[in-house]
Amino acid sequence: MIEQKNHTKQITILATIIAFNIALSYIVKIPVPATNGFVNLVEAGIFLAALLGGARSGLIVGGLSGLLLDLLAGYPQWMIFSLIIHGIEGLIVGYFGYKKHITSQVIGLIIGSIIMVVGYILAGAMLYNWTAGLASIIGNIAQAVMGLIVALVLVPVFKKLPQVDLKI
Image (cartoon, rainbow, N blue to C red):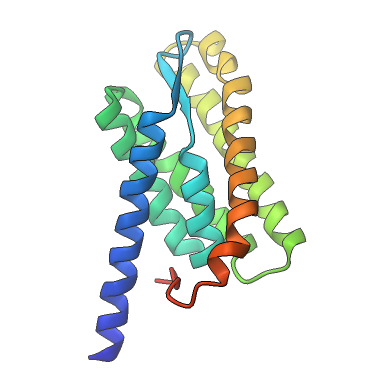
């Protein structure tokens, strides 16, 4: 019974992070006309969930944040790509960074960011053309760097809170 109660609490916390991540990313978004997409702060929530909760939490928050954000922001053509790209990104960051030294966390963040940038190059090329895919590079790198900075600043703060256990 206690284990199920903790599981429910963890799912609720992840759902709250997803909702907050979508709201923050929806408010702070910069359109990219060449790709018919936008740059936002979605990486911050994905990276936090992955570093604080591990690979599975990163996968869930990453995939659902990306999918729902695209749906709600009016970019449905990107939904499935975002589900896959941000899900894998969160999985990788969590795998390398959960309960690990800062060096491993940074490596995970960099690999996850590279996966996101390359994923959107390929997605842009599939949806439109290679020019559109390549046009997304700068914006996606900026998005990843912003998320990385926010995560590295906030992870130590959240680790001090006894109620924060995102492992699912």
